[in-house]
Image (tube, rainbow, N blue to C red):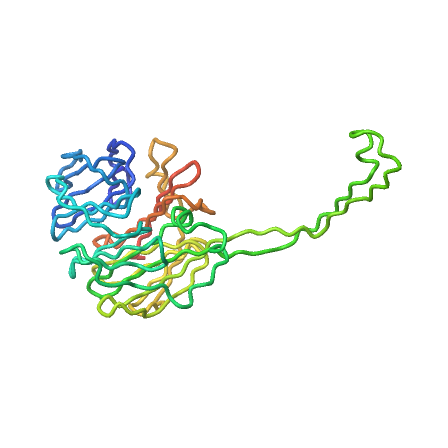
Length: 350
């Protein structure tokens, strides 16, 4: 779906088979769209109507990261711990880099040519020197990360598949932002008065009169439930040391404005955007408000453009995107719902 950034209207749609990721290269004005086993490229340039200009097959089916400085594409393998390095122009597989463990998320620092890869086996993150494919350090889990009882009974790899870790690299600010998910479990009691007497079962299992079976009573039945929370940790990319951490109530997503080096953090239950400094302190907060833009509704009822009206609660498996157009100073928030997909456009100029 191609949207005019000035009036927020849908200009055209481009058919791509099962797209699951896309990255834009500002240097070459190319858009890379990844599907299950294919990458499509669209040369945006100044063409009034866009179309797919090239495509090539890929093996890896995980997260895609673009290095616009070196014209490289990195794609992670979901099946085994490694990532393919691909020439962005020809689609040629250049090499495969092993990471020892499967990843929950990854992000690149094009200045230092390092890749930050989350580690599924341990709650830390591997730093890989992309020039030789070797591990050169780690970013560790904050000491105040909540002790989780789910570790005793939930397989970590299942937990990884359920919640993806998010990594953002601030190259000029020399910072790495990582969002760690966790579950907060609560035990409560439901007061249930339930009595099963001999008269209730006599007609079902035969005549039990005289067996002296007591009544069965159940009360204060315990049950557990879990709610999702997250923790944002900020690291110094030069020393690999933890600077600060912030606890978040519910799901969150973040993006970076490269023009003013501001980091924007969206928290779903509050429906607010927080602007952070490099130490993680809140500089400003924005409440997402507004009305439905009826002129921007497409003919497909499953896709609507909103200025606000974000549906909650989210599914844990929903795709949740948060990107900024630094030229227009607008934020685009996308949410995949149960039956509809939503796009919220937040104009930061107001």
